[in-house]
Length: 182
Image 1 (cartoon, rainbow, N blue to C red):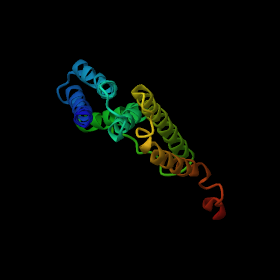
Image 2 (image 1 turned 90 degrees about the vertical axis):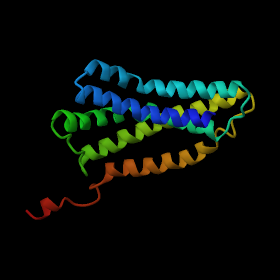
Image 3 (image 1 turned 180 degrees about the vertical axis):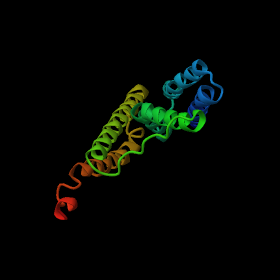
């Protein structure tokens, strides 16, 4: 049952996002679009409530509860950025707004963006693992089963940190080629 709710919530996220942007830009109904877009975070609330109810009904913490926690964490960490990105592109394609500026491929601005992305990932991780632990404690059975995916996520977070922060040192070791040719 919980897996069906998780799937419905993920589908609901994208349906509300597309419907909100379509109402805003294609139908020129910005207030309705705003209401639909404001419903996007409520999908996570539904997923969290469904997970808590499942645990309270006696379910043992499992991968499905961890999956819900991961989705909620990622929504908290990256949801606002995703909505902004989608809104800029929808405005461009549906309302003739200027094409969004592509992020830089290198340099200090790229390094800053990569670090900011890692901090969003860290926020997602803290929220997701916190929910996993909370569901485990709520069950009264411990949280070992619910925390299973957290170990893999920890490895991904560390790799992401190494990659994201490596952009901060890009060019520091290599000499500036433009200065050499002068």
